[in-house]
Image (cartoon, rainbow, N blue to C red):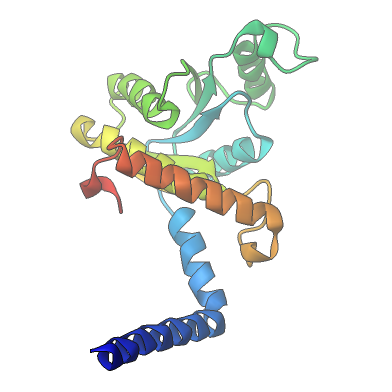
Length: 219
């Protein structure tokens, strides 16, 4: 019996070693696939592009939205901003930040028909509650398809949350990851990208384990 257990343990150890060797040899293609899973993207056309919410609007997001609008792939840019207390507003911003963003978009040549700023309340779980608030608003505008621009590896969780909320509203969501802090190509060579990937992977598992996103919407 001890000899059988010894062989079984030796077999498991051998399998682990072989998997480790295979993982090391094929680490780059495996990491590339993992990165694409967490940061999905594609070439889409839709009614609107949603620039996912934060305390402030990323310049890279605006550039992506403008590119989609100018190319005719969307008809409108939806800018989502989280509602924050006045004391937490960025220093140096005069006036109400959403109003500042609206004026800046007009200064860039956009008409009021080409963009909409939605100020979303901050409630937990933040990404899911934002999706509910934003898509309820867009359903009233008869939006049927939207491109969701989200930051890097956060895109998978954001996309699943928006997809889950959009399904009963008959709004199709297409994900578009936007890398503003690090490069998508060979992201594993950047220490900051590793932290981002790890953190967002754990948050995705939290959303799934907490049933904020049903398993049928988890892919």
